[in-house]
Image: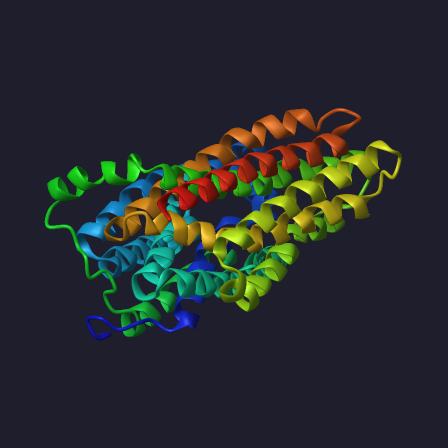
Length: 395
């Protein structure tokens, strides 16, 4: 067992978060095959995506407070056990309802994402924590690029069930790694749930918490808008193949990787708030420029790709500092703050997905997609300005 207060290695946190990200999209190439085997519609099987997100949102609200009360380590390990069992359940399911039920239980892996951020905040000072979160983000940006490719290869060679066996194996491996390397990092546990919930309004009443949350939510909102609209725009307007659309979907991850690398290099020199503001301007202006070029007649998939890269780059500059800012409002409730902001982000994503899908359905869909992403960027920029105002007032 890890020492009671051991600081985990960075690779442990990277793998922990990557499994959580990978579980969302590794099986997407298998949706058609799953629907065919169970004899149901593609739409029904696709509920495995929205149901997973819904459960993730609820669990983020629960796991954060639980980790503040009982510690990060036990909640994290239990979440990984649930994930491994649920992954095996998906692989062994004999009907679609069992599959969907176990798929929802896979949401237990969200503990890795929520508590990974809280653990970083526990063991590092705010400026250093932003750098570490950026390093984790740079590494995990590869997960959404590689996971669908791996899933597609496994599906074609061994069938869709092999994808979930891989997830179970990955979850078990990370469980062992966390058991050995990750000690308890929460040294400010609440005495009881009653004490915790008496302190919780400290977060809810904080203007800084909601301002930082606005930055996070609307930055991620632009990403969700791209996920919702890019496949339809790519196929219907640009007449791209599904394989090419899949590559285009990785555009935000490419930008996000670059943004996180910049943050790790320049964060200490310029400060988190300045990078947040730069990121918000870059995302908004990049998407606006792409929309303008398309409206002027340069209707080309490369323009959409460039806009998506700008969005990802801006998010890479923004999210590390914003995540630390959310959790720094009340360090003794870092898990709760991380979970609440994450849950709000997922809910906003669930609202944006059908809205953007509707907006991009017309002949001007490409321009509407970029404008939707720019609108999210503008709201995130307003939130960043509010953060700056509050910090000036408290200085």
